[in-house]
Length: 327
Ligand code: GDP
Image: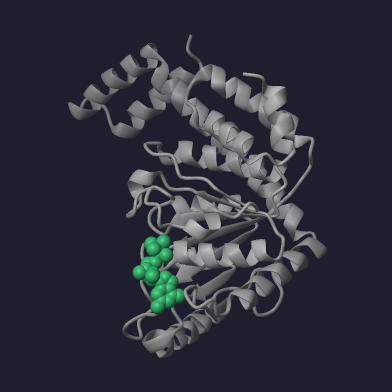
């Protein structure tokens, strides 16, 4: 495989080369990993940045419908839009993106759009790395906007938030007046909350839900890197294409504010540091579990703990000391 050729094609915006490059970063093979790193290094030189938008929401809130309508609006403005998913397809209700062909069908036919199905059977750490590298490839390929979609369950939205410049939480109108069990931590990550399905019979409920969230957001501590009134809650209808232009306006304004005030670069720098540390941690864990000596030591110490011969903490301290200074 000729990495320099793929790099040139990706940098020229060739979507087939981009798809091949992403396949390369998804591969578990050691030789592919080396090529993937080389590719990323070459493409770093393009210095291009997209607006990375993380989008999270539980199954059924309308993520695919939103991405389709929102993506079509953006390509209509001449912007190039890439869509990536964080979750392994096994964790999704409807299979992978485009696994069922109805998802984002119109957007997928647009020459300015690129939609990447999520890979299956990768653990979350692997998914984070693959998505991160895929985001970098899309940026190098000259996409203006990269949408990073994730199902709002488990840890994946933290991954999406750590990968994005803006993090959007998509919600559906609540039946009652309760906030929909959205964890406080996720609310705190959100830059903009969009209450979808504000149309037809659901419109009054959507407006009420939006007001509830706007109230709840005001109680959260304001982040120093944000202007007044952020995070915001807005209503949209992905199906009827209502409120999407306004949502985009808000996203752009916030992104611009962060750029103007140095927070954009600071956030990316902090994210790079996070991913570097994460990668080292993952690598250490992989190296530990790959070592037969360490596995044997763990097994023996585990037996001793189970037998009550030693406390869990003392056993862990001994093992760690041994790993730090093997002789
Ligand atoms: P996802 O699981 O979050 O990707 O949700 P989907 O986009 O597949 O949408 C789930 C259901 O909600 C589908 O039946 C959609 O037609 C419906 N839906 C999505 N957006 C809207 C909307 O703006 N208004 C209404 N009324 N229904 C919507």
